[in-house]
Structure formats: C-alpha cells, structure tokens
Image (cartoon, rainbow, N blue to C red; front, side, top):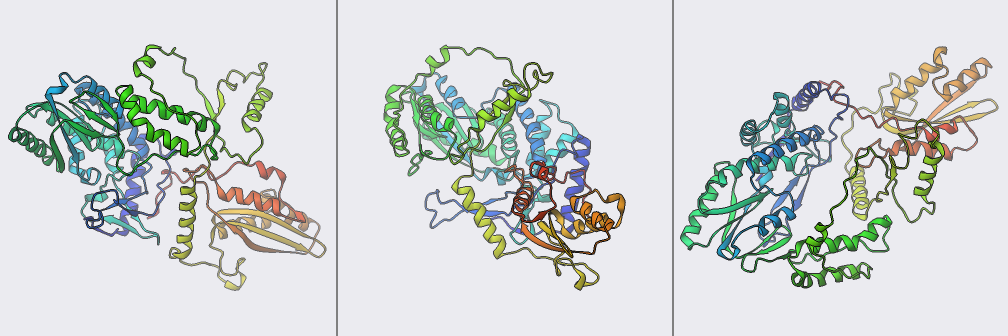
Length: 570
C-alpha cells in the first residue's frame, strides 16, 4: 500500500533550486524546460486473475521531470558499457531472447526456470540505486554531476485536479521511479545488471537472462528438491536487494514476452495472452497511405520472425489473417525464412543530416501537401543557389504524421470537462486600486486569453485583436505605456492608431473585452492553440481592423517555455 501526504511548501522550491544548480553545471540551463504538472491517476489491474476479489491498482504519475531526458542518455551509456564488459544476458527485445534460445546446446536435457520481479518500479529504493551507481563506476565513468542529476531525476511529486501537491510518505526526498518517466526503463536496466552479476554465481544454472522485470533461466534436468534449492537461492539474491520475485521451475515450455519457447522440440512460435485478439487499423481509416500500405507486410514479417518454421507459422497465422480481414485487408500473410532475408546484405549508405517536415495527414485535405512542399524546395533553392548544397530534396524530406485518434480526443474532452467541473482554487481576479475602473469589470488578472480592443471616435470605430499568455493586466499596462510615451508609438498597430488620433486631436475611447481563452504551446502536440485562436479571431474581424495581414504568418512566440535559467519563486 502506498501512503501519500501533503507536500511541504518549501519542497517544490528546493527541487527547483537544486535543478537550476545541476543544469548550470551541465550548461543546459537555457535549453531545458521547466517540468509541467499533470494530474496523477490510478489504473485497475483488471487483466490479473481474480481481480474482482483481489483488486490491485497502479499509481500513474504523468508529471515527468524534464531532466529525465538528459539522464536517459547518461544511463543508456552506462548500461551499454556495463553490458559490453560483463557479457551478461540483458535482453532488449524478443529477437535477442530468440537468439539466446536458438544457441542453447542440448535443449532436450534442459528445463526452464521463469521468474518475475513483483512491483519492480516502486520497489527500487534510493539506497539500491546508489549501490548500483557506485558499482557501475567500476565499469565506466560517472561524474559527480551525472550522479547527482540521476538521483535528482527521481524526485517526484503528485498533483491532483484541484492544483494540490502530494508526496509519497514512505520514500526519502520524494524518491520514486515512476512508470512512464523518460529514464524509468534505463534505471530498471541498471538495477537488472546489478542483480545479474550475483545471479550468474548460482550453481547448476546453465544460462539466464533478464528483460526489465521478467527473467528466464535454463538448468539441467534435476529432481524437485534440487530445483527447489536453486529457486530459494534465486529468491535470496533478489531479497538481498530488497526485491521480491515469483518463480516457477522445471518447465519444458514457457510463455515469455510475446513468444512461446519449447525445449522438448526446440521450436518457438508467437504467443498472445488469453482474450487478447489482435485489432488493426482499418484500411479505410484516416491514416497516412504508407502506414496502411505497409501494415500487412509488417505483420507478416513479425510473425515470421517469431515462428521457428513454416509449420508453426501456419498454426499461428489464422488469427492474424482474420484480424486483417476484419480491418478490410485482402492480404494473407505468408512465411518468410529469416535466413533468406539475412543472406542479402544491405549496401551501406552515407549518413546525411536530414530536416524532416511532418504535416498531419487527413483525407479531408484534397491538396497534395507533399508535392507542393517539394516544388517549393526546387523553386527557392535551385541548383544555381548558394544554399542548394544545404537545402535540397536529399536534405529536406516530408513524412506525414497521424491526426489525433479517438482515445486522445476523448481524453482531451474529459480533461476539459473535469477542469470546468472542478476549477482550481483561484486567488484575486482583480488588483485595480479602483475596482470601478477595471478594464475587464473585475477580471483583469485572467491569463491565456485573446482580447479585443475597440477604439471609438465621433465618426469611426476600429478594432484590434491581441493575446496575453500571462496576466491580461500586464499586457494592458504595456498598451497604456505605448499610449502615454511617444517613443513607444510604433510598438503595436493599436498604439500607432492611438497616436494618429492624438496627432489629429481627435476624441476617442478604448473598450476592452475577452473574446476567447485557450492554452499556449505544448511540447507533446507541438501546437499553440492560443496563437491559432488569435489568427482565427483576426480573420473574423469585420469593419475597420487594425491588425496586419502579416500577423497570419507570424511564428509562435510561446515555443520557448520557461527554462531552468529562470530563478524559482521562493
């Protein structure tokens, strides 16, 4: 059971100060964004046996420290160096497991022992990770800054839908290896390497390996009491690290990852969990054509790789053919021997620095975006251009991305509804000395809005659309500054018009109103709804509009999020 409690007020500031120090030492303080907060939630493990009577939950914390992007690279280098020097079997995918299984000698005289680490991610403690890092120093270089950065990336806070902040009570200094963290898998691999060094010393175990929290070993056929001693030795190794496992011994056949391995026959074939039939993207769906075209061949290649021969492939193929047929495909998958594919060596190609353009694909768009993009390259960077060597069809390429799927749309809608139903606690909405003079009738502290300024004279009315990513009051004060001081008269189209009226000694009044509210740039989607909403409102303007047409093609000013260079608020 995980106990959580309210986080002390000073903790967030302490984390930000430590992060700022580390990024300055790594010289990335101007490139690393501050961590955005997301609501934590629970998922029910309804795929487990007897979950109705023994319900288990998994705590998911989507708030991922951005420093994890840096430590992911560091841990990946550390793990690679350790694997190359120790030659332990830490598998990264199913194909490496199959390679290990294929090379086992005398399979008929061996038995499987399969084990699973219980609650691997939450079971990793700060002391265990420190032991692993200190042990890793004997194989590779780990600087003090890298060490501190890896430990800092484990400091994790939980956020609720009302803006509250929580921490796990049983952990020291908010330590947590959260599922979905940028470097969570790499931390588990490092702990796995640390445990594997002791597992190889267990007698009577011929060979063993580990994939994240799933382990597999083979041993010579032995009586039950001897197999039980090996099982207990395995449990002791994990208990010494503070980890619990479940073990099964003396098995001839085992389901591991997405493949079934059989020592009696030496064969392997694809494995799927019960009631887990495959479902594929429909042929008529709104996906890029290359995805629809290559889907059947990708499935065919994958099932062939997981099948040891054509007979096992033929046994597994019907369920996948049925799924393809249900999705509107007429293709029937056929077996391809892996050895035949490996016989033709691919020609080595020189690596190029390529800039990719990834527009979202939609069948509703009739224009051939790709063709227009390539024509623009030929038009603006012809062979006679000095920039042709840098920008040409070999260095500028296009690849369509997918639109949001139904799950993402529903999730976004539910999140919006929940925010409206449970708005976060708000403080003051106005800080004007005289509330009656507030430009927005007591709501001048609203943020992330599109506003409209209507300038009225005796014989004319003009409108101006603007946005405020921070508090509207700050943007309002900047406008007033440009109205009062002539050196700022060219700051905006609105200030130009106001000074034009002043030069003509015309009487005017300015009325302010909020026309829309949206959110700024998000890294996950790469979109800025606030800038898009501003352009839309400018298009909708009727009458005398002060905004320029060039504002339609202006770049987003919010892509540069607050970085760790910004000093944390105490």
